[in-house]
Each structure stands twice: as structure tokens, then as C-alpha cells.
Amino acid sequence: MATNAELAAEVKELRQELEEVRAARHAEEAARKAEEAAREAARENEPVNRLKSSIDEAIADIDGDELRRVLDRFADEVTSLYHERPLLTTASVFVLGFLIGRSR
Image (cartoon, rainbow, N blue to C red):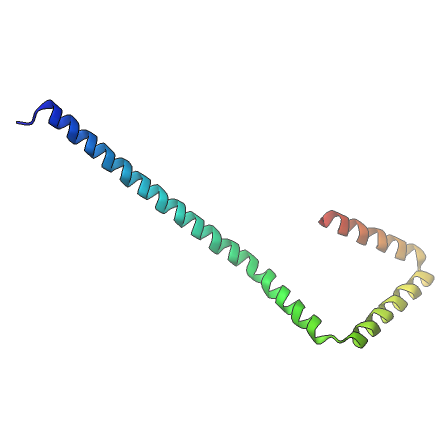
């Protein structure tokens, strides 16, 4: 028959093993959650990354003269709109500034 000291030593040993198993499970759970969070972040950023690459490709395809022509045409349109409808232009600029300010 086992003595009290032997049983106490065995209980201590079993408790230590239990703590090791719990620590290993906790580490595995933390690693799994971190991996899942990384996958979720990658899924969320996928459309943004595709959009960024599309924008980069579009910018690479535009040459300087074409960009200057587009900007000049845009400036002419805004100027003519301002002369034809000043209140609408002022309200549009205010709303655009408000939206840009709220986005940051």
C-alpha cells in the first residue's frame, strides 16, 4: 500500500502535468486565434489591395500630356460651372470639403 508521502508526490506530479497540458492548450488556442485574425485581416484587405493595384496600373498607363489635358478640361468645366451656377458650385465645394474633412 502506498504511503501518504508517495500519494502526495504523485498528486503533485499529476497537477504539474495538468498545468503543462493547460498551458499547451492555451498556447495552441492563442496561436489559432492569431492565425484566424490574420486570415480575416487578409480577407478584409483583399479588395483594398486589388483596388490599389488597379489604381497603380491606371496611373502607370497615364502619360503626362494626357493627365495635363484631363486636368485642364476638369478646370475648364469647374470654371464654366462656377460662372453659370455659382450657388451650386459653392454648395458642392462645401459638401466636398466637409466629406473630405470627415473622412480623416
